[in-house]
Image (cartoon, rainbow, N blue to C red; front, top):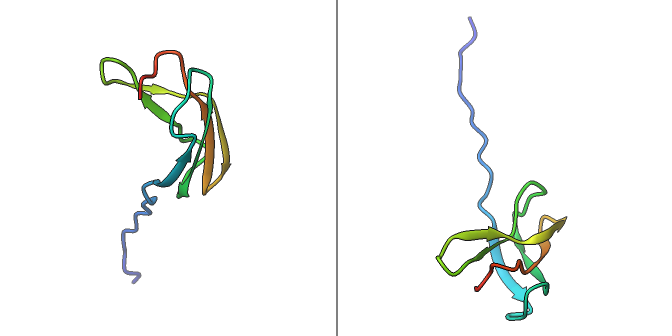
Length: 76
């Protein structure tokens, strides 16, 4: 008789260690470095109402680097 077991894999939450540049106008390409980034992730900014907005042209470079452009509606 075989014992049954349950196994659930859980991904690590992304960790941001730095980003450059720290400010810039709409269209600025922001590079974020850290750990545990995934290709199906995204790069988020805040709009004026405090809602998340996705970066334009998100690029997954590696599990430690992603890039994206500041979208028109972003304020932070």
